[in-house]
Amino acid sequence: MDALNLPSFEHKITKSGANYLIFDTIRRKYVVLTPEEWVRQHFVHYLINTLSYPKSLISIERSANFNKLQKRSDLCVYNQQGKPHLLVECKATHVPITQEVVKQVSVYNQTLQAPYVAITNGLEHFCWQVDFGTRQFQPLQEIPAFNFE
Image (cartoon, rainbow, N blue to C red; front, side):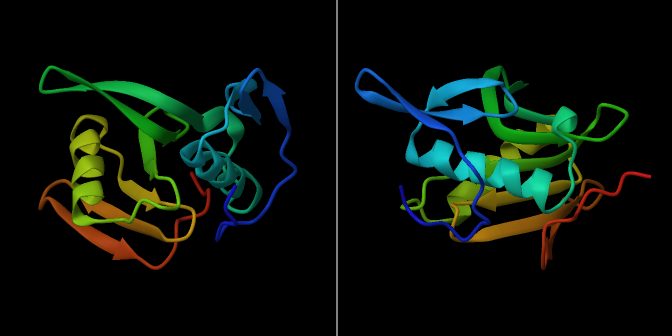
């Protein structure tokens, strides 16, 4: 797997048939190790170990309906009241972060209404604070650390 611009962590990888699997600490099971999953697992550990988000507030591949279509978010971090706080879209390292990717996340977030949105391909990371009143995305220099008081 590619080296990422995220802190490393002690990952558990095993092989099952033709597939490599990585242990997902949130779902508490081994999942197929794809390039996107590699980025997702690193980002999950970054949220937990660097930004101090509790594991219990992180959800992976949460479903949401938008215009009668079922959409899935890569990561969603909730606040202590159970409302979406941070929506994260993960891409494989070879996938550039384009306007189309930003649009994809904004569509997901129209249903979830998370005040923060992040996109990463493991090499580049972007984060915005969303103002739903003005429909504006304010770019942030860094992803906010856990601090739900």
